[in-house]
Length: 153
Length: 166
Image (cartoon, rainbow over all chains, first blue to last red; front, side, top):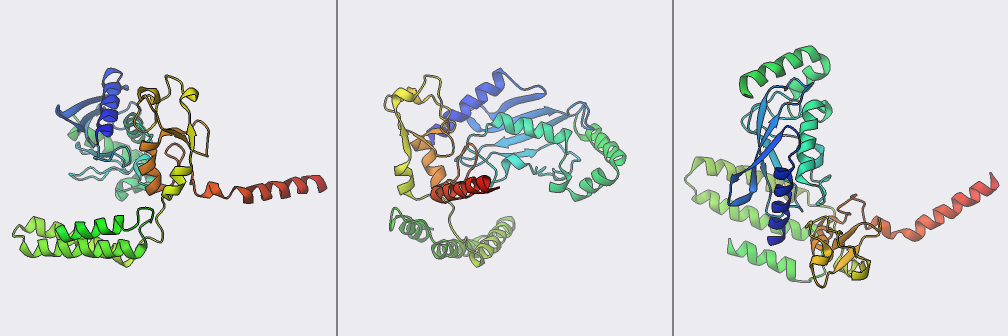
């Protein structure tokens, strides 16, 4: 649909001219506005600080009626992201029953950043990370920091 | 695949105002499953075969539990939505879905939803969403529930009475 391309181009222009702190956006392929490469700095005050995390954001053809899909390409030890090659993230704003076509990609990105600061262990996809986060925070932080050093350069 | 799509379009167009019923959804899913099974029997790639088997098992789950109802609003609801005239629109007002200023269009067809008078959209943009979701794209209020206005008024009156006698 042409209208969705227009809206996506507009959002892309907004995010690239006035990028949120710690988030860098570029297109995977200049001729296709549907696939975005994201580089997100690990937020200060989180065990991910100092790391640079690559994410892939894919906008479906029926965006904004369907939510974008976003995956971590960099391994991350986090209760709401699968610790595998998919890096699937579980985040409230993107759930089909919560998605609103008026939501902006920018708010998805800042919500992702916020999720790194504040994991939601009750909505976990990586249950072992969630258990450590809940029961042994010091150990969780240590492991998350180690994985950040190892993968997120 | 041609038989699947022809049947699907039949389901969709047999009555333009009808919402798909659970039975029709199951029928469409059965067709899709059969088509995938045909693909499965002809594929030689093991990865593809796994993917197809996975898809088929998901579809079979869905066939067993068809949706109870489709959440969208009927076309008549869209037709009855309150229109916003060109005079009421400011240059800076944009549609939250396409992000375009309403007045970029010489003849904007803008509607306002009953949940809030600032919830304005191009009818063309909000229509498909409402037909499938039935909720406001800004606050996700269920618009079909909103229709029970008389009931809510009754409740208010009772509350008022209670206040008097308390």
